[in-house]
Length: 272
Ligand SMILES: [Zn+2]
Image (cartoon, rainbow, N blue to C red):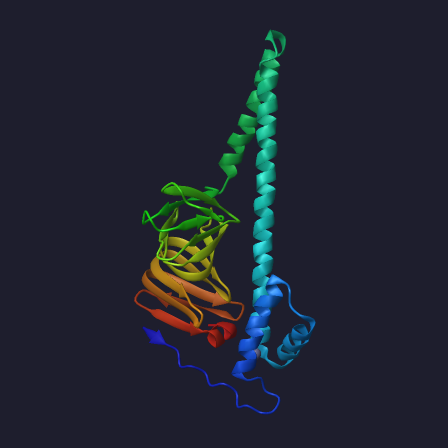
């Protein structure tokens, strides 16, 4: 396991932000993202951002991440509306088909039309639109989109959260590989077909092709096996087999089999 040398904090002058200022700024940032920041706190937060490039980067990345999440949610809602319209069209066409002998042929054609559209749609579809969630320990609680998993398996679609509570563990099965959620782990499914998830907290093990989005960067796994842990103090990325690529807006680096990297909050803000 390779550990990066920790970078020295800048010498404290009267103006330079201190570690304590940054800690407070991160708390304020979370208030800012979730709404409900007091006006006086807002001023303090913005003053800190003007003086501290590290927190400024964290702020920008957080906004970008929130925007990505918003887009994913909007796409999921649009897809749901499209699916509802397709369903209504199929239903209308089927009803037209049972009206009588004269309209039967026409109705049959109408009934076939959505089937043809659906066929063409699946031909151009990039893959599955849902992943299967499997609860690994019977008594352990797993939430999918906020609902407790009652059966052993459930489906999760893009735009939904999956979360293990306490010692709960779960597995995500996709055509391109598998991903195991450790205890107290929370992730958001960004794309089912591309295996893109956002790991909010906790630990995942994976095999196959996955894109794991972290708060300050992305891990791309290609036919790989490895592990990612997100804690309060930073991120640990281990590659056991295959190759991983870690990157953010500042650059990219490969993580080869047998290698592990540990990233503190400062490293994360500064890039690979
Ligand atoms: Zn700061």
